[in-house]
Length: 131
Image (cartoon, rainbow, N blue to C red; front, side, top):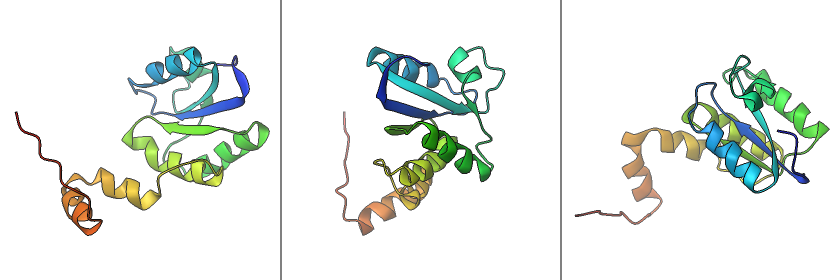
């Protein structure tokens, strides 16, 4: 996606088979935001993914590739669409000095059985839903 405001470039990090990617791209397009998709989807049928930045989400060198893209044209924000990409998203957002969650928070949120004890330690109120 190459149209949009030059001062509002979004990095969208997504696994190649994410069903969420198109929705994020549509939202960015409606708001006039330029979006660069970083994904492993080199052969995707979605043109923004196929034309985007091709990275291996598991490779530590992916961070360097994203930093180089940021140096060429800075990102105003970073969105990681799925569990597989949130840790990398946090790392690049921190390096770009955009608002982000810390990696230890992301790791804790992904471990569902540890969530209640973490919430007690942080003194978060427990929400009880009933019907």
